[in-house]
Amino acid sequence: MRIWQGGDPEDAISMTRPERPPQKLCFKDNMNESLKFFDRIRDSTQRTHKAKNKLVDRSKGPGKLPRLVGYLDFSYPTYISTAAAVVLAAEFERLAAVDGEVPPTVNLHLWNEQVFRKLAQLGFFEIVGFIANRDDVIIEEGDTRTMRIVSTKNADDLAKVDVALQQLGTFLNPVQRIPDDIIIPFLTALSEAMSNVTNHAYPEDFIPPYPHINSLWVAATADRSKNTLTVVLYDQGVTIPYTYPRIDRLERVLKYLRRTLRREPKFEYENDGIYIRAAMKYGGSRTDQRHRGKGLPQMIQVIEQAGVGAMTVYSRGGWCKRDSNGRFSSGAVPFSFGGTLIEWTVELNPAASVSFT
Image 1 (cartoon, helix red, strand yellow):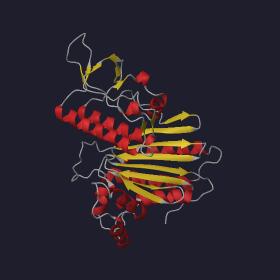
Image 2 (cartoon, helix red, strand yellow):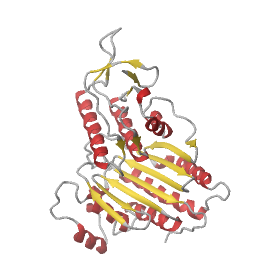
Image 3 (tube, rainbow, N blue to C red):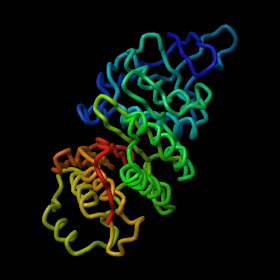
Image 4 (cartoon, helix red, strand yellow):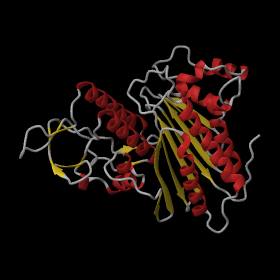
């Protein structure tokens, strides 16, 4: 087999059978199998870290092939969604930071073309450290423009995201730019979400099940054929189902939770989707402070007033979707997303007007 960790490819041998991702790495269409795969990656990371094993063992001396303790066979998947690609990049970046080594790609020449192109467009190979970071943030291809994954530990990179999203908005409507009363609320809501993550996703009193690196990952895609802008945000910190039961809430929220929570859940995360749904519908706390939960309702308000759109929030083992006609649906699975993932799509209609009240 051929491995690559940046630099020149090498021949190598593996000491164990490979780990195969599902053919479709997608939370919308193949949630359980995708989450099982990411769970296995996290568990493997934990075991490797505790055992202090090298991912690539070159200790056998000159002339001997490097040995892998195991590897991910990415010649198997035929599709990866943007959201799954962002989570994958985050997991690999965490492993590189914690262990000082990134799992090598294996037999890159056998990877599915769509999977490779998606990861390359999103800047996966730059994020994990295989190649140097590019200066350009926007990647062009046909009717789409993609903002490569921005990995940040604070909100300082919001300006970079702001400029990139402005470029994506201009691409969607090159003749008549998206008006400020649409794009500004869009960026304001995104800024609220990013600030919430960078300020509150990694509290000192929270002990995560896996090592984390206090980061936030953001990516975006503009599709001119659909006139849509999609933004994906992901963090590996404390989740909505963990924090929401621990904050002061308005009486109407308490009534909603008393009515909908399952008193005897069948599995640990069964109520997680209900907490996310409450956060999306009502926001955060009795104090109504901005950092205590206004971000998600604000993002929904942009959808309602800017045009057609949808938003899905995945957090710990739960998910909640607000679809394009305003309906909410939610649920939970017995596997964790390893943090909170937001996928937010807005159809940018230049004739629309947005204002926050």
